[in-house]
Image 1 (cartoon, rainbow, N blue to C red):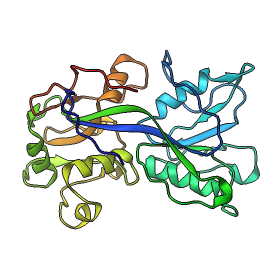
Image 2: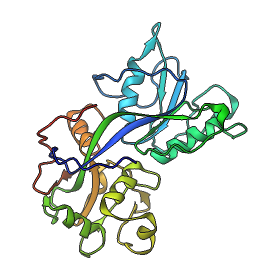
Image 3: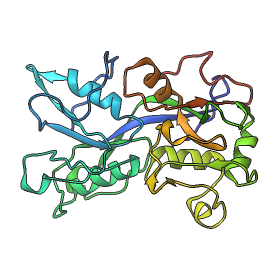
Length: 285
């Protein structure tokens, strides 16, 4: 993943968001999409020319585009939500593309696309692009044409806490690192599910590896009450000692009503005396 810290932004962390596509697909111009993004393909045709799955961070953008990008009045993009896991999808008409488990997260979306491009794989031909915020172009057979990574935006991240939280709303980056390194035992840090691009990005900023999550910083949890922690879902933060990473763009969009509001009682924190909700510059898309 291309990791950057932009000092000219109010936000501490910024990461690119993108789609990974099979080479040869026509590119589209990503403009503003008004209204609330719909879940899964809506209307006809249900099964479309370009099918994608993966990242929770970007699915609302692709869902919105899927409703307005047409050729001859026919919708061309099918973007499937990463959840709920109990709801199966049938992305293409082929028999092997029926009743599939939803890929949840950047890693899962990339893997699904690679499997779809692999001759003889159980889901061969089922997907055309993967929503991903991680640049990992795993090699695929030459005959498939390979993969292309297409960045289309920049997101920003900070930490979120419950409205009645005992955790300060203004922390330094080093303070946040201390919490996620289990140096403040009264606080409970959460991260999203395995395969999440947000998880990978956040851990990298904290200077923590997946191996250390398992063996060293065991206070970090990705499950609460038996359920996985879904990225950008503030409803997990119900206690005054809990903290989790959150996409600022997602938080703002949820508050504006352009996507489902899952903030619960979550508030965003500020890092290094920089307001998370008042940027001084505009990110270039």
